Length: 249
Image (cartoon, rainbow, N blue to C red; front, side, top):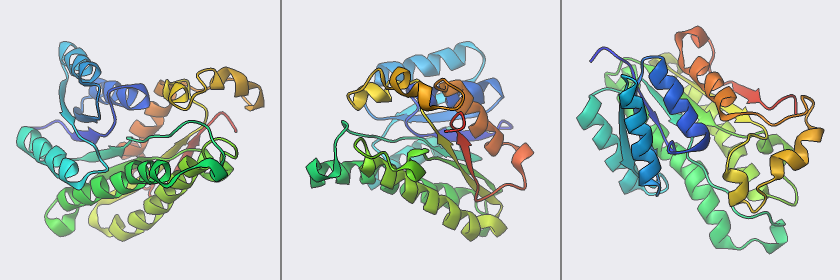
């Protein structure tokens, strides 16, 4: 197989789906994971296929090691190679102050956003590192501007989990730089997706846009273009970087 293959976690909707579409348009074969929405994932695979692309959808909860192993086994069986990983899968909960959060909420956020990113990065390195006989590649982690703004009164747990993702990005980038793997992150700001509804505030973009220097929320496609640049050879000397896509916020 001549085309490069990327794995995008949490890609049945929102930013992940936009990354999958753009990657397919640019000639990548795409393996996408989804948590629950099989209909959306299958529709995206069909859409990519109808445009002449190559895609595979695999159900996986990235917070579960056995699911991650099954996801990568499916990737190996279908494509036999891996050139890039996008750690996009992430969750948040309803807006809440820290004093009201229980342990199960915090654990769920960290297990998906942090543990899931670690597990998928581990499996990607095992396949792409020249130390393991691979040909190199790139990893892009999805962080958030919340990692440096803190999200007080809303999602401090989510913000803290994304700060951990940025530390993972920096440390892993240095660890595997000499093994042909670049590791970077994209930190979106307020992006117009349905994740805000999941947090109980579907009008959040409209409510907060006046506080953004560019006076608007971003689109998933704008985030996707940044991710694809970091995956590409155009970013060949970029590793350990966090690229803000936040309208100046």
